[in-house]
Image 1: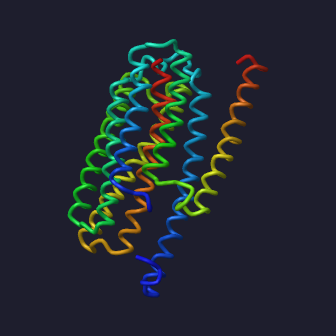
Image 2 (image 1 turned 180 degrees about the vertical axis):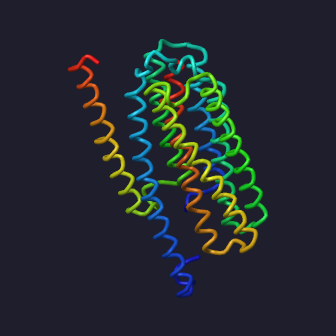
Image 3 (image 1 turned 30 degrees about the horizontal axis):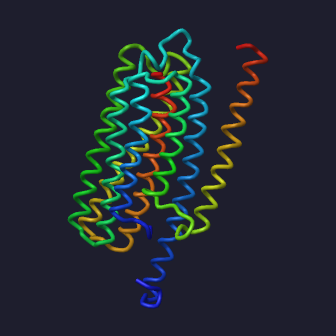
Length: 99
Length: 199
């Protein structure tokens, strides 16, 4: 909470707006081929999540308690195993059974 | 306030606040796992339309964009409310919580209108695996936002009756974590559900 300030909320808001407008605009106008648009949607989403964590939830490596960071990192590991594992299993199944 | 100036009672209060903040953070991490698995289920179910309509026929880009704006602005107004808690401005806290509530209520209204519209055109959760996964994922988020609205009302009443005491401020802090977390989950929803669906 130490880094909460109006300036930080405004920076976070502006960055989030930019990172939302880009993918919405690309989808609305079909300015790029679908594959590339999909890639940009993914990159903008990851960046926006980081923006929210930094400027709205005030996660940083100096004032945020170590336990909170540890829980966040552990959750990322769990997500990687569970989501990655689900995709692995389902795509493998899809191929083998030609569903 | 430095630790040296705190009375034993205040120190205890601050410690309790820290512990509850960590406990609530652990709950949010658990919630993140739930959302991630709903996202994975949805992604796997995208082709499972059972001959029914897919995202391209059903989703409305303007509606998703408007929902995004409402939730993002509400996250920012909640941030301002949090700053007013620290500054001790009771009236301003009430005002900004009120603005946040209205924006969140607008979001829930748009979502319910979308769901009702889909069900009316025969694209309810029982139509296909794709739609079951869609309603589960987006509906779970909508229920979270609705609970957040209820929580805002309860804490507004506490700010009004009890003032910005340490326990009330501590609860507002955890509500803030919850509210900002829901906006992060929404970033996932528009980036995985609506935008790729309309591509």
